[in-house]
Every structure is written in structure tokens, then in C-alpha cells.
Image (cartoon, rainbow, N blue to C red; front, side, top):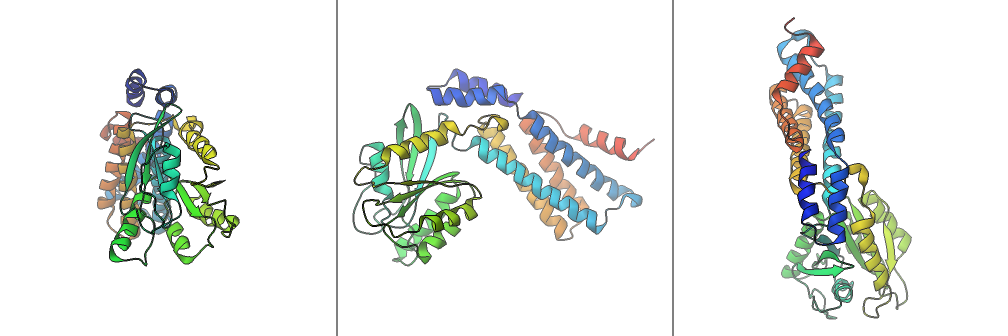
Length: 336
């Protein structure tokens, strides 16, 4: 399929083992079957709605309408899940992006400098030293990473600090792998709880820093908060960024995230084109679901579903109209 053809190009131009494995994963595991099943479900929904517009006996009642809305919600979640799981943070030429986040003075900059073994971010006892995102290219075991140091979350700081906090929240929302750096020598407060509540769904690596000081943060409580938010198990590491303890374990965890978590059931790493089409499909699905629950006409809903179908078809390099019409005719015997 088209995605596998793109994987051939990535395989030919791979510059390291990580890129080679990512390309092979996509090349040897087609996603045609998975996306094809979703598209079949969508075609049946479209057929039901199109038939209800033309034939009174095929009118969709309130319960059936709610059932369709729920199915659309699941389909949107599936599309988004595949796009995020299969494409985010897999080794490729653009690098594996890791976002380091947390409160001010948690030790994010010190950790990044220790991992990179060079000065990337300014380290100072003064709070809010990092005011904007700092990105650096780092190579670990022949894998290209992009480490992103973000401003510390400090919503009660000065105006510049509050703006930096807002941006920090936005940065982590666009990341699928977050290194959540927490000062283990401080108790869990409202600011940390608020910051965690703004984290996106996705994998989180919890790093309890300053392990050389007496521990005051309750690890179990943090893990519970993160698991409730991320929806998946959170890995925890205890380190001292300044002292160097645990840095090697953090490197291993990042490499596992880049290579060891390759989910072959999702076809390795899908291309940026495929991920973009799946995201657009999810967006159209969400809009159709919203329109249905707001009581809008099926004519409007049907258009959103056609857009969804076209996105899924473009992912696989196929068309739309003939297949939808065929489903309508075969299901309702229209025209016979």
C-alpha cells in the first residue's frame, strides 16, 4: 500500500538502526486491514443516514441516532489513537521529541544538561530561569533525540512568568512523551496538582529529582494522579540531576521509549501524511457526533461523514463515492 511504499523510501534513506527499525516496522505490517474495518463501519453509518433522507420507512429514531453518535466517538478515538501511538516519538529523521516539564526549580534544565553531557539550558537557583522552550539535538546510542526544556509552571509568578506557564502547558499538550520532573524534596502542592491536571493523555515518565535530599513528595500519590490523567502506567525513576545519580537509568528509559515500545499491531511508524489524514478524520467524526447530538439535520451530518471517509480513503489511496453507493444499494435494495 501507499504507506508501505513510503516506508521503503525511509528504509533506503535510514541513517541509523533506529530509523531502519521504524521503517521496517511499517513496511512489514500494513494498516490496511485496521483502517479498512473502520471505513466499513463508517460506510454503513453513511448508508443508513443517506437512506433515511430519501425514504421515510428508513427514518432513524432517537435511540438509533444516539447509537450512531457513540460509534462515531469511538471511531474518532481509534483514529486519534493510531495516529498518536504509531507516529509519535518513533525514530525517524526528524528525531524523537522528548518534552521535559514540571514546576519551577524542579531540575529540568539540570537533567537535560546531564543527559546531553553539555550545557544546553541555564541552571540557576533563581526561579523561572527558563522563560521559553529550548530545544536541543542529542544523540544517544545512535538515536537522534530532540530534548525540549520548557518553562517551569508558576501561575502565581510575575506577568512574564504567568505567560511562560501558559506556554509550558501548551507545549506539553502537543507531546506524546513527557518527562515529568518533580522535586522529590518538596511536598505535593496545589500548583503541581493543577499542572498534572493539564497534561495530555499519553505516556509519562515520572522523574523524582533531588534524591540526595530527604524525600517529602509521596510517590504513590503522584503515580495515581498521573495514571488517572494519562490513562496508562507511569514509569518512575529517582535521580539526582546535579549529583549524577540515576542519569544512566533515564537514558535507558528514553531509549526504551524510542525503540522498545514499537507496537507492531499498529504497523510500526506510520508516515506524517497518514497521521495527518487520521487526525483530520477524527476531527470530522467529532464534528458529526456533535452535530447529531445538537439535533442538526442529517444532510449536514452526512457531509461531515463523507469528509471522514475521504480522509480514511486517502490514507489508503482509494476512492469514496462508488463504495458508498454500493453499500446503500446492497443494504436497502434501492432501485430494484
